[in-house]
Length: 123
Ligand SMILES: [Ca+2]
Ligand SMILES: [Ca+2]
Image (cartoon, rainbow, N blue to C red; front, side, top):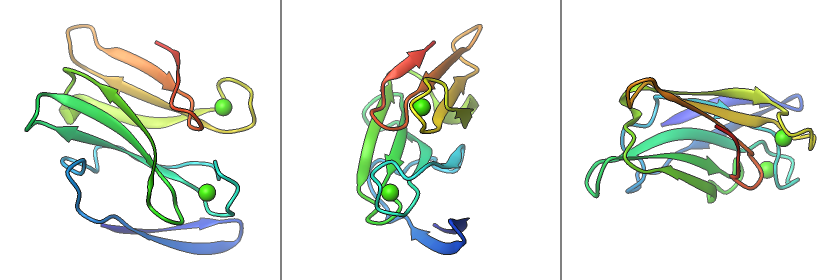
């Protein structure tokens, strides 16, 4: 998968190489701030891993190297009915945070994730 984003008046192209954590990607894709100050924004996406259980991951990768910056796992939750979006700067540290929601289990769940360290800020 490749995508192009415009950041700081320059065009950046990313390519995701197939990996074990890359099932069902595309349910949510989000461009983040430059978390490691390398002048390239990071990005996040949802990934599901059914082979070892029904876990959904929020994968945060370096926009420059594509290395996994943070991996936040939600055990037992499927990406089928989930969404990923921008939460704004929820904790006021100057970096945008993420909002992930799951329609299941019954009643659903919503979590705010700090993009820089993957901490759950609110649920
Ligand atoms: Ca960066
Ligand atoms: Ca923040």
